Length: 422
Image 1 (cartoon, one colour):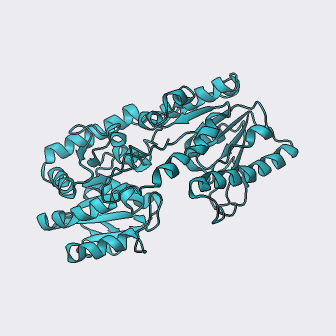
Image 2: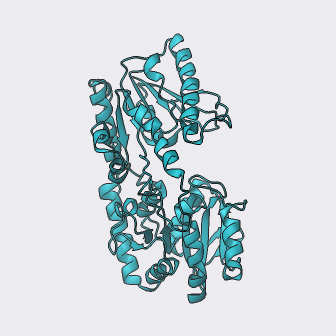
Image 3: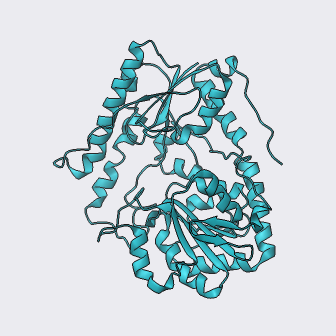
C-alpha cells in the first residue's frame, strides 16, 4: 500500500505505526513535514518550507486560521509535486491541528483521510479559566472559539478522525464524535519497564549525584510552564525539602512555552519561580537539566522514588503513560485527563492541582509508606500491561486503516506481534 503521513514535526504522534508499517517492508511510506534531522528507515520525508507568520494586521481571532491556510497551501504544493512524480496514496494520515491536511482532498479527491483530532477548544471549561492565578482576559472568548476553525474545516472534509483518549474525544461536540475513532495510544512495554536494580543505583544528572540513600523526586514536561503545573510543583518544593533532608529533585523540561503564555514580565517560568521562592529552593538538591535524551529520561523514571505529573484539564502527556509502564509511584493532578489513567490509591495518588502543600503531602506519603509505594508501583505496571500495550494499540490502528481502505492492508501483510512482557 501507499501511505502518506503529514505532520509538521516528523514523526509526531505517528512514530509507532510508522515503525510497524516500515517493518513490513511491503509499503511505500511518504511523510510530508517541516525539515528536521529525524530519520526512519523505510520512510521517505518530503519537506515543505514553513510559511511566514500571519501579518500584524490580521485580526487576533483569525491568526491561527491564517497560519493554517498558509500551511495547507505549502503542503498542497508538496503533495501536487508528489502526484506529478507518480505517487498516489491509498490513505492519508496526519494531524489536523495546524491545517496541513486541509487542501489534500483537492490533490487526491476520494482518497481516505484519517486525521488526528487532539482537542476541541472551549471558552468556559477545561483549561480555560481553570487556574485563577491567570484569569481569562475579558475579550478572550472569541479568540478561543476561533481556535476551532481548523477543527471545523477538518471535520467537514469527509474523512474520519482519531483521538487518543476518551477525555480528548469527549471535548468534541456530540455531532462531531461520530466522525472520530477512539484509538487508545499505547506504550512500548519493552522499552518502558521497571528495573529493580535502577531503584538503588547511583545516578548522575548534570552536577547532581543521586546516591543510594537519596530519595529522588522527578517531574517531566516538554517545557516548564503553568499548563503542566510547574508553578505548583515549584511551590511544593520548600515543603518537601524541609521535611526530608534525603530528598533530591530533578525537574526535566525546556524553558520555552508549549502551551499558554510566557511570563508577563519577560524571561521564562523557571527564572520567574526561582525569583519567587528564593532561598526556599536549595540548588544543591534541585536540578534543572533542561530537555534530556530518551535514555536519560528513562533512567530517571526508573530510579524515581516519586514521580509528579501535573497538568491543567488538557491533553495528557506521553510521559504519564510511560511513567506508569515503568512502575513509577505517580502523584498526579486531580483532573479528568489524568484520572483516565490514574485511580487514586490504586495506580497512583491524586492531589489538587492548585494545592502545592497537598502535592507535597502526597509525595511524602509515598516516600514514607513502603507498603503503599510497592502496591502503587505494581498496580501501575499491571495497568499498563492491560490497558497500554503497544500491540493492542497497533492492532486497532491497523484494523481501522484496513476498514478505511477496503481491506487492502491486512490482505497484503500479516500483523506483526511481539510477545508482551509479563
